[in-house]
Length: 89
Image 1 (cartoon, rainbow, N blue to C red):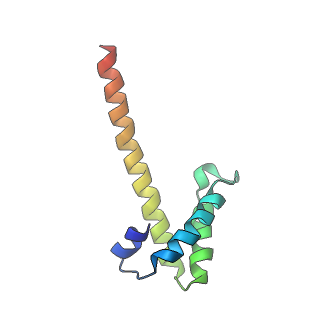
Image 2: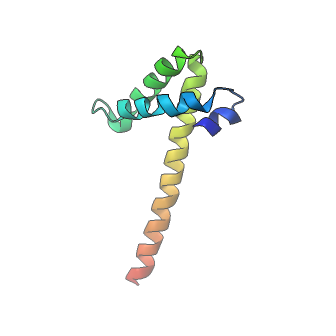
């Protein structure tokens, strides 16, 4: 996520990410939403807002991370499916 912030030209020290991201991940694990959607974004906005990041930037970082996670998961799923298909033949 630090590199996502750097790609958006946001200069926040990596130390903030190392302390705040575990709290965001813990909040995401709460069983109040599917896959932590909304909870992650809210935690990002709140926690990173405490260090001076604006709401739109925090949501953008969280959304890019979520999109990246989904894309990589789909790629991994397709590779896993293609390997299991080849073994069954």
